[in-house]
Image 1 (cartoon, rainbow, N blue to C red):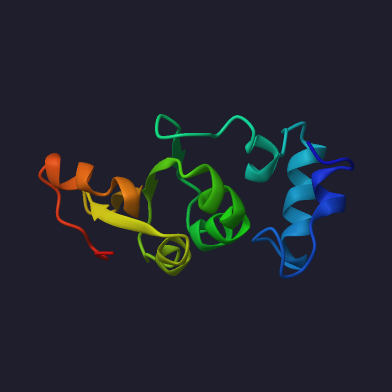
Image 2: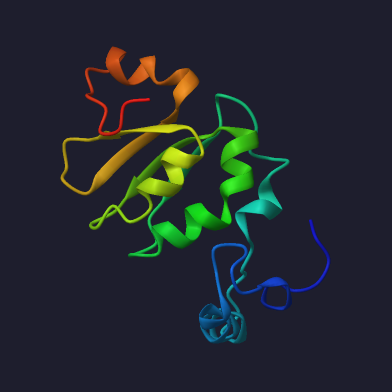
Length: 129
């Protein structure tokens, strides 16, 4: 894990969180919530059996942008909820194929090298590789 608090490590244009997220992060920390970046978990997120569930109420684009290195290197399977699909460009750029699930706002994102699993599950890709 990197040294320093998460709030100290947030830099505009990096980590998917810019200067505008510092007050929110500071408020969460002041309330006793533990805040960690996905990059802090990179050693634990490895291989095809790693799964992330992301439900961040509209901040998907920021999460995926901040997790770009984790997505490119660790290649986890991702289940996420999104109403506006704003995070899709970051997933595509990291080499992921997105599959809508039966419920309107839930998606499965698989690394392109494992996207055949989506077809095996009877899913149609939203953004074919």
